[in-house]
Image (cartoon, rainbow, N blue to C red):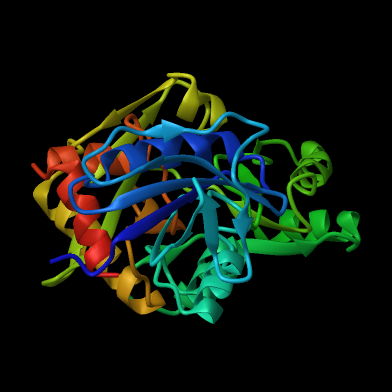
Length: 338
């Protein structure tokens, strides 16, 4: 017997990642068990929330053309479709970026008392901000964090550059603290290029983190909660043709994602155990992916993805398949244990 009946999958976002979010949301909606749930796909962008498609139990998907999509009533998170008012009793969040990854959407749903698939509003807010998240992990004894410098828009960039040149070693990575899919990120090798990289990062958000580069192998692992507790999926190694794992490498085929990662069992166990510890330490829920660099100095934390990509080619679905799990059963487990 399922806990829920009417599942809303919400995708699209107010960020540069909105198109990736749509692909993730459509894939997720297509894999949710149609014998258990009615599935409703909601496209949400800049305050306009509309029903993009629906699939009743044991029925075909019915898309709604743009311009005639039923509007979502935000007062109670419902929709009127074919003369019937539908109130959603569970939300699978697939919005990359704001508001679905930043905690804003979670806060709205928490106030309405509607359960959802991801971390709480508070945890989502902390995890979404790269500097805040690192601050929660800097003093733990189970993972390393690279040295960094924080800068807010309006601060003296020349003074920030001087601080970086004094305290960090090049290359450094300049990142918006609240961005994803590598938007706004620059790898800086020459100090003369730092100020421009900071200004570029500000095009994606008001806060930036400048992080000392760490040499090593890029690894990623996801954790989730099922009826038995927190579990880790297989580790993936990312090998890119580019200078680093940027947007082009991620989405235009210029990288290899090796799953399972060709690493020693001890390294695999370390990454999986660390992922479970980070998941628990932050208070995560749903499925969460954690990215790392593993090198001579040990395992370094890069970032947490509380709404990881979920297209057929994304990292988490690859981990699920490698683990021998059925994607539909996996999603059912996430829904029923949220």
